[in-house]
Length: 192
Image 1 (cartoon, rainbow, N blue to C red):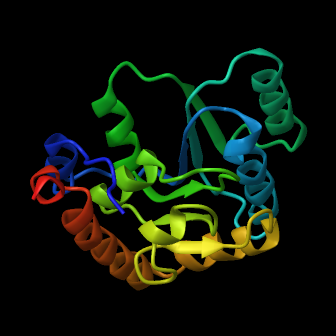
Image 2: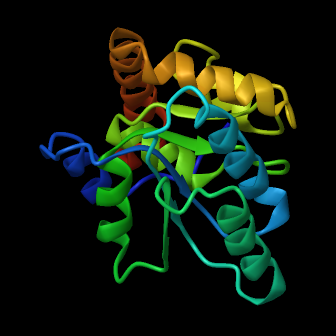
């Protein structure tokens, strides 16, 4: 597998000290196939045992689907739990918001090898995603990230809670993910 290399700037951000201001972050287009509804459903379930859970959604979809997602957040009374950012001014702003989160979640239904996953791994932010398409080539389950069955929101929620409640597991996954990123997403290595 030959992945798109991440910029050297992404690797430099790995060691930048930031305060974690959210538990979860989703970065991607607001479209059904990216699993944004599953992300919201999982947070709604988690809220029952962790009422103060904080999540960010970075990205934009526009049109009726964007409105539908905003209504879903309101319907589930998740306004205090989920902050929608829309587009951010710069690439570095997006990376810093990911870095300020404990876990990156992308429950995508179709994806060959999401750059957002590669970037999160490069930043040392643990990833939870569905076990589909190119993701198993990027993530060794429970070693450099967590993969769950596509569409299984209960399993997604359990994985999120397990990782949020286990700081050592987050640290181990973060270190393993960064090592994988160095070997597979660092431009000079990819070129060699």
